[in-house]
Amino acid sequence: MKEKDLVINAGSSSLKFSLYEMPEEYEIVSGIVERIGEEGSICTLKVKGQKISRIKEIKNHTEAVEVMLEELIANHIIKDVKEIAKIGHRVLHGGEIYSDSVVIDETVLDDIYKLTPLGPLHHPGEIAGILAMKKVLPDAVEVAVFDTAFHQTMPMKNYMYPVPYSWYKENGVRKYGFHGTSHKYITETMKKHFNKDDVNLIICHLGSGASISCISNGVCIDTTMGLTPLDGLMMGTRSGAIDPSIIEYVSKARNKSLEEVTSDLNKQSGFKGMTTKNDFRDVSTLAANGDKNAVLALLMFKKSIVKYIAEYYFELNGNLDGLVFTAGIGENSRELREDIVELISKPMNVKIDPEIHNRVSRLKSYNNGVISSNDSSFEVLVVPTNEEVMIVRDTYQVGNKVKEDKVYRK
Ligand code: ADP
Picture 1 (cartoon, protein in one colour):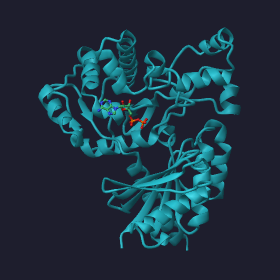
Picture 2 (picture 1 turned 90 degrees about the horizontal axis):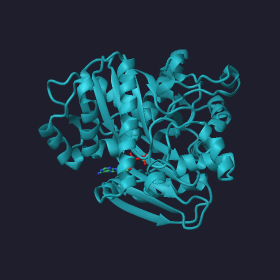
Picture 3 (picture 1 turned 60 degrees about the vertical axis):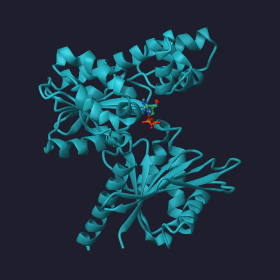
Picture 4 (picture 1 turned 90 degrees about the vertical axis):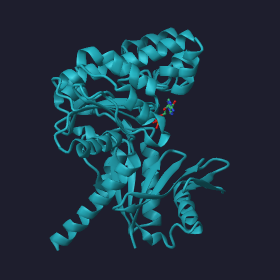
């Protein structure tokens, strides 16, 4: 029987999961338990495009895991929970401790607890997910896949802020970067595409949350998100980089606490702040109908993308193999890709081939491939990201390595 590994992405009141056959990375099922600890809890499985839902009172994460496993058995996806060999957990923050995925033991769990101040909204749910799985499946290997880990290769000049040094030494104030699982997946895919390990890339992960990373010789040397995901690009509801003095100024001018201003910058800014809509498609529709703020918001979004592409292009000294567009907006918005490449076309000597772009963009299932012209100085590509696959791949590899090490030590 093929090995089955589970991916868990636990939030404070939800638990997303997908089950894979490994090492083929074949997704057997995915699903979500929602409204944990609230009224109307529901578990939904998605099998071969079909949704199967069960409404049941689910008080906590342990019950959520139990219901998820019951549903997998009831729908004949597994016969016994013991069929699940390894579990990969998405964990937001690995701080400076974790530059790769690791098998979760007492020390790792303790570190994730200690890193909670850096991921206060995410870590409590993620820890609950890990503990719930441990309780229900004590013998399975559990792996933590950190969203920050891939960016740990950044050099100090790129991750330090010019603030009192003690803030870094004593409080860990530095750039960590996020979406690492997606940037890693794209980097691995591009290593295969260019058939070499030392790829130089600029990866634009443009979804509701958005970040760009700069990959030199196959490793990340810079990224746009910082201590938290608030920094860098303008996003669906986040401001991205702004003058930090705005926080105190607005706090006084509008009689808001620091927490309220920070929450506004995370949840009421970006596209939402400018247009009341956070979804890129809605903003594009507004702009097409002549809404001035929506037109402006799109110009600002593109400007922020071009700013970082230019910075990273210089950081790579112009030696770029590929500029990659990925995630919801990057994969689906042909117009945005065209506009961005148009804006960098002259200084970077790159063009989209309209016919190829047409072909790549026409089929929803085929948003994948090179879209630049043959005479461009580097390739522009659309590559669908797959964070779940990256998590399960790491889980399989790290879990097996630990098993091999144990055999070796014996
Ligand atoms: P997240 O995972 O951060 O929630 P996604 O990667 O799913 O984000 O991206 C969501 C964004 O992608 C939304 O702003 C949405 O409008 C945009 N998007 C999705 N489909 C399309 C499309 N066909 N054309 C343009 N934008 C799209």
